[in-house]
Image (cartoon, rainbow, N blue to C red; front, side, top):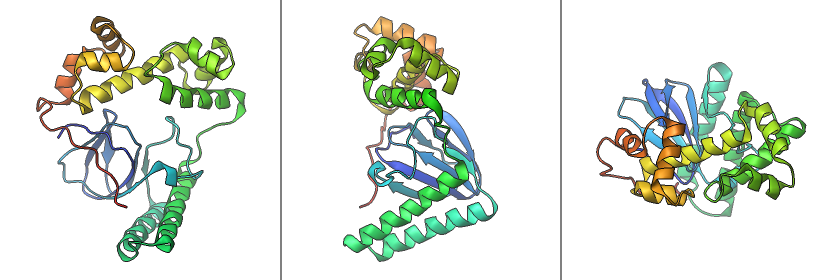
Length: 255
């Protein structure tokens, strides 16, 4: 099946078998004890490879302050020992409580607390991403604005103006956190969104380009080839070998 973009968070805990799960076009090798965090909007592709997994899905608003939802946050862990036992226990208890307590404010509050415990365990075993210092804080603000602003602007100057700082400040912060310039960070994000739209939607190449601020398809094609290494059409053909015949509908987590 082709990739699709869930509108919710998904935690996948591999319980049996071996295989791969593709997240944003990167294959994640999985075996028992592998934990993946798929975030809303990422391109997710599940292969038929004999991998069995437990899945917890939730709306991002339920995460609260228990996890810093940043693009640089970890997405894969290989659990073992007491960490694996604890996470398995939380998954199991969530499943039991979802089945036993289906409705009512007390049931909803119980499930929110169960999720909070699971997210806290993941935050502890993963270690919080480094957010110390002025440059790290500046970069975090930049990335938040970029997440919502990349369809409107690819100019670092626009983000610097919004944040009340200089382009040099953004570039210095980006280099300190990622090793990439601010302009490269912007282009990386736009190229990723282009790949997601080409692989997961029926939008034409020209429509994808216009959505990302390229009025002329030729300009979008040059940008995409420079960033990805192949043309948009070739990328779509490679990502959707079945000619895009079955783009999955967005699926929602259970209430």
